[in-house]
Length: 336
Length: 279
Ligand code: SF4
Image 1: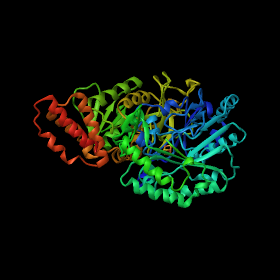
Image 2: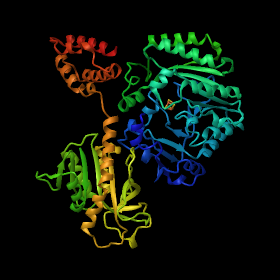
Image 3: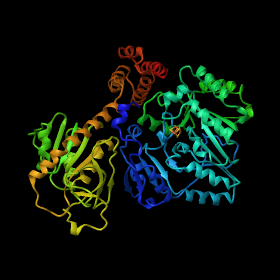
Image 4: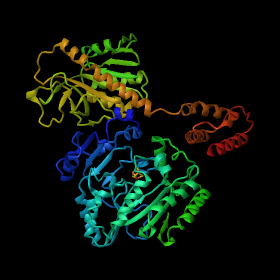
C-alpha cells in the first residue's frame, strides 16, 4: 500500500465492536490496552456486524475492524478432508479467531465469510473446559490456528501462548499452530513443548510479493524458523498451497534450495505439501468479492473441490516432490 | 451520485447554497435539489418519512453501488460530553422502537467525532428520557434513512452526519443558528465525501475490458445463437480470461462475424471459443 493510500484510509482496528456480555472480560480489557485510540462500539451479538448484508469485503481488507465476542455452542470441529491429519485419528480444529490480519489472495476465508473484519472470541477458558471434557475420553490432535493466523495477532491477544501453556499440562493433546508470522519472539520465553507443533507456511518470495499481502518475507520467516528449532521447538514446514504461476518450476526449485540452504532438514519434524485446492462454494464467493489470477484459473472440480487439472497437478506434485527429496527423507513428507 | 437527505429546508439551505444545487421542478411529493452530481431531498420529520424520501430518491434516480448517501441534520445530545456545534459521524444507529441497530462501515479517516445515535418517532425531552437509551445522541430520522439507503448501497457508502444543536432541553429553535451550524460543518462533510469518492474510485474500478463484457457477450450470443446456459458460461469464462491475461483474446473478434446455419454449428463454434478462453 502506498503512503497516499494509507493517509486517507482508517487504520486497521480503528473501530472495536464489543459484545456487551464481554465488555469486562479480562481478555477484552487486555486487548483494549493496546488499542487505546480505537473507537469502541457496543453491540449485542457479533453477527450484527460480521454478518451484515452489503459489506464490501475487498474494501474492508484495507481497513479491518476488530470484533470481540463470546463463543457459544460448539468449540471443536472435525478436521476437513482437504487438510492433512498427519496420521492422527482424532483430528479437530478450533477457532478462537475468525479472519486474519494478513491478506493472501488465495485464502479460503475470503470465500467463507462475507466480512474481512476480525472476530476474537475472548472466552478462551470455555474452549479449554470443552477440551478438558473431550480429553477424558480420547486423545486429540488440534489445529488451533485454523481460521486465522494466531501468532500474527499475538501482540493484540496472546492466544498462541495461552494455547501452549494449556497444552503443557495435557498429555493426550497435540496442538498445531500454523503461521506465516515471524513473531517467534513472543514465544521465546516459553518452554518448548513436545506436544506443540509450530507450523510455518513457506512460499517463494515471488509468490509472497504477488499474493500474500502483508505477510513477512521468506528470509525473515526462515530466520524465525531457525530460532524456533534452535530453541528446541518442534517445527513443521508447510509448502501449501503450491500455486501455478509462470515459471513455477524454476521459482519453486530456487525456493527449495533457499529454504534448505538455511534450514537443517534434520531439525524439522515433518513437511506438508499441498497444491492449491478450495471448496467449490468458497471459490464462487471469492470470485464475487475478488477477481484475481488465482480465482480466475480454469480449475477442475472433483467432489466439490476445485484444484488444478489432473495432468498439471501430477506434474507439479511430482516435480516438487522429486526436488524436495533431494533435501528431506521421504518419510518426513506428507502430501495432500 | 451523492444523495443527501435532510429533514427540513433550514438544514438543506446551506448545503444547497454551498454545492450550488438547483431545485428540480419535476412533479414530486418532495423538494429535490440537484447539481454537480449531488441530489438533495428534503424528507420532513420522522423515521418513516426519511425512509420514504430516501427510497424515492434512490429508486427514481437509479442508485448504483459506487453512489454515496448521507443523512445530514441536527440532533440532541444525551451526554454533556458534546458541545453545541459538534459534528458527529454516527458509528451505530439504533431505531429506538424496533431496537434494530445499523452499523455504517467507516473505512476512511475523517475529522469528526463519532457516537451512537438513537432515532425516535417523537421528540425526546431530557426529563422523559427512557432509561434504556443507548444512544449518545438522538434524532428522528437516521434509522429510517439508514435502513432504506443500505438496501441500495454498500455499507461503506451510507453515513449519518449529525450536528449537535440541543441537549434535549427544548430551547426555542433558532433557524439562523441551525443554518450557521450546518454551514460550519460543510468542510468536514466535503472532506468525507472526497475520501469516499477516492475510496470508491481507486479500489472499486474494473479493467475497462471487464466493463465491456455484457456488450461482448450479447454480440456473441446473437452471432453464435447461444442458449442461456452457454451465455452465462461465456460471461464467466470471458471475465476469468481478462483477469488472467489483462486483455481480450485476439481471435475473439472473428466470432462476431460467423454465420450459423444449425444448432450444431453454433455449439462447435462455442466449444472452439471455450477452448481459447480456457487457455
Ligand atoms: S495467513 Fe493464512 S489465514 Fe491469513 S490470509 Fe493468509 S492464508 Fe489466510
